[in-house]
Length: 146
Image (cartoon, rainbow, N blue to C red; front, side, top):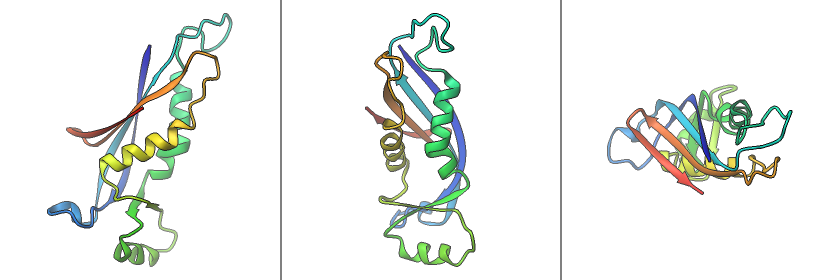
């Protein structure tokens, strides 16, 4: 069985060497979907009985590990010295320095890496992170697959 839940967040970024507009500082209303697979829990009197995982738990983990970290932050590539220097002049600015250029693909892969360690097979139902889908716009997204 597979389940999917979706959260949204706002963040800024730029793609330093992009041939078009994305080389400029800008932001997006991102959406992230987390897909888990596992057996349906069959444990009488358990809150999760009949579920793969409670959606509220899936969301709470994703919020804590990724969404709250990236929300209303500027995601900047560690090699983008000009932007890092600029952001350092803004007191208390929420900046997330990334090891790769913050494209939808790299962000999806990073979110997958982070979340894969977070979802545990607590109930012995073979819980597994299958996919992180990151929407940069309503019509453009990247999938990181397990």
